[in-house]
Image 1 (cartoon, rainbow, N blue to C red):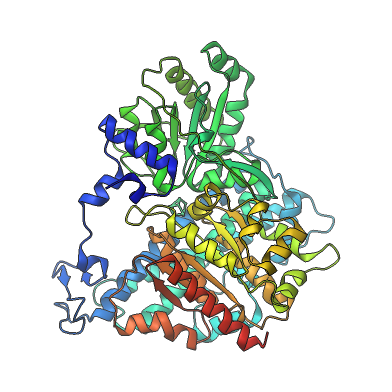
Image 2: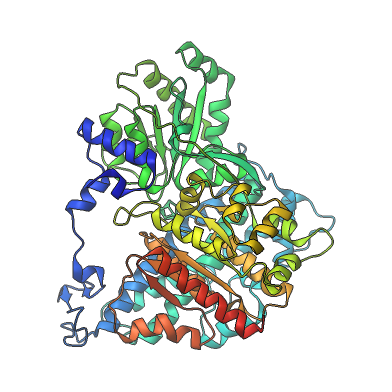
Length: 625
Ligand code: BF8
């Protein structure tokens, strides 16, 4: 296949061609070779016990049942539930790591990180009904820690952050019995109920799926965002650069790829250290160039304007430049073959987290009690690789620019006005029709679809139709590369949205951060409800979500927590269920009739846009606006 049929990212196209010349295999090549199993793709296979695996016929789903008698609905729902459990576990375990870091800072055992954002700490405390007046920062922080720990460990009751959920939405959850207790309990119960011979009623299982997913969105992910903001600062708009052109031929290039911001925060300190700068200069380098990739890259991009080299589908391609002196990874979305591709170019490749080693790869563990020990060592190795560079270097010239760092707090400041507590001007502009609705476009890139294409086309369609777009994750990088996160992109928006963007001075596409920062979108929609004028629950709002190129189980967990929160959520290209089944009907229609949101599916971006716009219009009509 021609590179331009694989991706619209020109830098990645260029590197695919180079990899072919260099004889280096990329995941795009394997995606071509390794066709998905058609039964597995439709989730019509059960392998939860050794009486099977049992394969159903997805084109005639009710023809057969598994050896135990499990129906297609039981099988597909169980599979879906386990994806949600895995995705929720990933976000909540990441959140727990942030919380442990926070505890270490409070107790004084960790000294290289501090409580940086006192304002955010106060706001989080207030949202948890923790007294702040006249109290020491550390005392407040200790109470916040104790309360947030319940997000994970609580066995009965409701997780603490449901206090932020609009009353009517929470009432619906209570009625449906889906308010999460604690993430550990929900994930455990999800795994239990999906084991052989336990819950075999797809509707009952789906309730636990929602409960588990909500423990992610309003739990693990939200805690991760809040604690990261408290420790590293709440983002506010910052000018950024993205794409492979951020790599510098005459500098030591270090890419940090992963999900935990602490690795990158420590790396920022190491790469700025005068002794290491000096060492780099002595090796003939003009400096040390620190660059992020994937989600932690987006966190430091939003907070500090650190350049970003590309999204999930470009991580190997960045190595193919030959310009990367070290790539260090922590957890999540790290392809095992990065180690091999790095080896082809003598790039130093290091894993840093005990949870995520790669067979054969060098492991230098990041210990939060002494983080610079790890990051300094990686910088020294990178300098040494720079000094001994032996591969021709080819860096694509492309650099995208934009403004990112739109936390929900900042959106409130920007679109809320200084004298008012809510999102009035945003809601007013929705009510008066200048803004038709709000869409979250988020999620992965996937080698089974043309990289970035659906993200970019969908967002263009949405803004053209006056829909304000908020973004996170790899999707945000796709749009930043395409130049849609600049205020100038308002020229591509419909007249109403363009007017609002020009008045406020914002792009029509707002980058909010990493995948756990989807919790910022939840906070924004909660705020829209509380501000008033747009209905009483999240399900009433003229909003929609989409992950056009999703691939990770984490994306399914995110989709489900948006749906359970009341948002119509469209996934693109594939959907892991068998069509024409009762479970499909429940996800696509039934949940909405219970006051939640619903799922949608489309294979091309224009259809995704059409579905989202139709939903937004339906909600506007119901609101009488
Ligand atoms: O968590 S958007 S490919 S990098 S899963 Fe992964 Fe998907 Fe990217 Fe960040 Ni989120």
